[in-house]
Length: 221
Image (cartoon, rainbow, N blue to C red):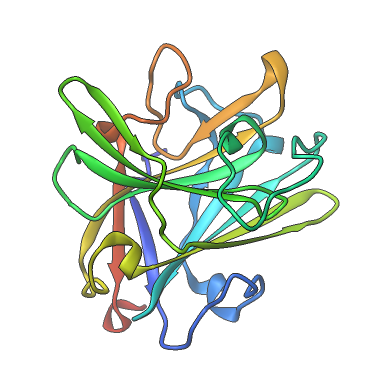
């Protein structure tokens, strides 16, 4: 099977919110499949997830749909009014986005959301001496989640101002990677759309990022 290297965002004219779980346009957006662990090894089907993206003049909106058959790993008392440091230790979906389309971006933005609706946003900068994390970064991101019997759906919405720039142009290409963390203990799963292939689970490998392609209205089939 040919690897997916592009995550295509579908352009919409109407605003999509984090409550738009069943917006009709989701069905026309192309899915990116999250089926492998960070190492590149295949994950079992019952841990698979998919992501779809839409974009407007206002924001980028990404919806994750995850299969869920194991007990949720979530906070007993979720914090929804502020970012949740350490969210990556629980069940979570993540996206790393770099507006700079260079081959290996030095700076990118990390957005996470959990089945509880908890969220986290940070700005990452890679230097020759290591990784710098801006914990005070305030993107204004919004997140929502819906838990069903055998699935979890998570939506993340990020306005363009969070990236310090205006909306992209149709056809523009950014860098991106998508992740899912699920389970606990020795069996915890670290799934990646583009595997990072590190010895230990590590999502912060910019050279592994794929491409986020902003599809224009005229590009629709």
